[in-house]
Length: 244
Image (tube, rainbow, N blue to C red; front, side, top):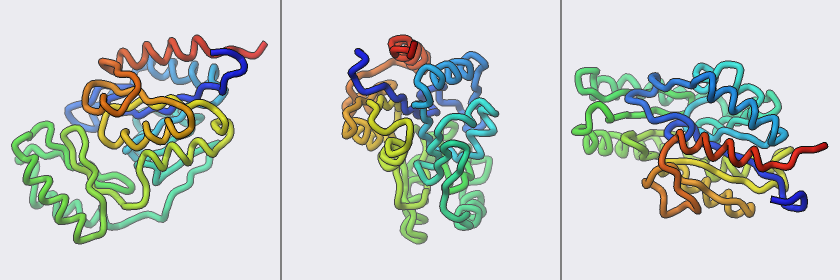
């Protein structure tokens, strides 16, 4: 990279990318070493670091603490956006709090299904109960049709979410902001929801990195694990020219 090249921006998925996918959503652990790397990357990239996640802002803040506050964060597949400390999101939705009661009745704790309530979504995780996959898919598709929602399949999860935004939209929204505008985005993700984000990053002259083989055919580069992602981030930010 030379001084004449567009500056680098890093756009990062969270689960399965920066941290290994956990058995349950609340079992994810962010280490002090990872927090320190994000702080370093934010400084070396002069703010061109964003996290783009299917989790809600509240969930990410609870996991990361104050470390994530200075970052640009597109949460809930882009339905929520926080930049320069300002949060932009549609009005609160009651549908998911309503749906959780019916879902818990259909899939009680004994079923092994983990139900994750988000600000703008409802995750139905079957990692602990793989035999429930088909029943969950049918249930999610029926609820989506009934309430005009979208079913987002993922790594051993079906998620019900609002229509109107995906991670590709989130990338486009972030790339319109300062200091991202005019930069060269590198998007890193591991799951089906990250495919539109990689396509969007390419539309801005950037590239996409897949973690694992699930979406490898849609990426420019494939890394084996979150540990490899962290090593690549260190390499990328070390190569960024610094202002004298």
